[in-house]
Each structure stands twice: as C-alpha cells, then as structure tokens.
Image 1 (cartoon, rainbow, N blue to C red):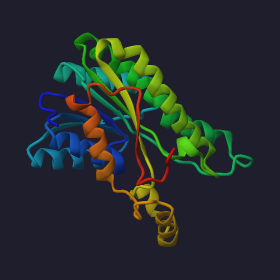
Image 2: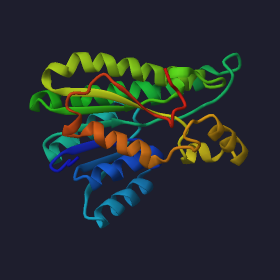
Image 3: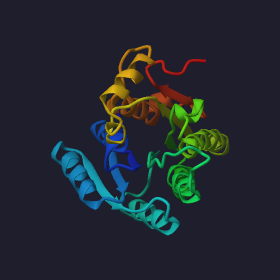
Length: 247
C-alpha cells in the first residue's frame, strides 16, 4: 500500500489516533502535514517522522476556526503543490446526560468533531478535484452508530460525520475522489486512559475479540483507505471495533 509521492493532511495529530495515522501514512511513503493546537507535540511528531526517514511539517491550528483552516491548507498546497489525502480526526468529548448538558458543551463537540470536517473537506476539495485524485477519511465512532448514554453530543457528531461521508462520496466520486469513514470501537488512547482498569475490563467483555483496540488497528485501516488498493471503495463505514457492533 505505497503512498509514495502522496501528500496527507491529518487533523488532531498531536496524540492518539491522529498521531498514529500520521506515523502510518509517513511510514507508507506519504509526506504528512500534521495539524493540531499543541505546537510542541506536533514538533515532536515531525521530529520522530523525520528521524525515521519520512517527511512531515507541523500546522498549529484550531480546526474550528475557518480562517485558520483555510490558511493552513493553502500553505500546505503552496509548499507541496497538492493535498492528496485528508484525515479528519480532530475530536473532543464533553460528556454529560442530555438533561444536564450545557449548550456550550454541545456546541464545542459539534464544532470540533463535525464542523471541522466540513471546513477541511471544503478547503482541500479544489486541489483534489483539479488533480482528479483524492482520499478523504473521516474518523467516526461506534457510538455514532449505536449511541451512548452521557454522550449525546459526541454520538450526534460522529453520526453526522457518517452522513457527511456519504454526501461527499456522492458529490466528488465522478472526479475520482473517494470519501470513507473509519468507525473505531474501544481504542486504547489518552482519551480512554482516564476511564480506569475496571471499566476497560468490563468493556473488553463486551467485545467478541476479547480486547480493546490499539491505535495501530485504526491507523492500518486509514492507510488502506488512503491507498490505490481502495480505489473502488467510497461512501463506506469501515468498522474497527473487534466485533463490538454487528448488523
């Protein structure tokens, strides 16, 4: 699944799934622009990719800021001539039962998890349509498919990502631009570290494969969808959940 000569833009790349995706794409030969708010972590990631023989640049930005998104993507296109692969991974949680959820927490999650994907997709589409090749990959969630108590905002944002994925797939498909989603289940990241061992053990019992997933499990799926081998797949939701959701 060679990605040599491809340029990728990964949001939420400073940690977790986004970081893993950036590393995997770089390992497969892509030049990677890593985007997030934490400049220090981005610099560390770029250094790691470079030390391994890859090529990467850091783009410090707030993905909910339309002007920052546009200027960052414009800068990457100016430097490398194109963006071939977009991974919309940036995401946050603000958990609370819906009856107690503050409007600010609803808005923050929807803006970061869903609106940012619209902004980034819109910004890269011109480059992809012009070259008649592109891969847009949205990181959704099993909870966007089955819901989760206390995560109405998060579940809604991820369900929205799935709908956005299918709409974009229909709009851009005639120009050889695919759009797919990866829906992780329970993945071991900094976001899940706070849940405690007992919670993780109980979660693993609900997963047919008997274990929580790793960042690499998700990154491998993203790398496949970004490759030429996935050229006839679009509008699809690839479940990476150990069998947590079937049907």
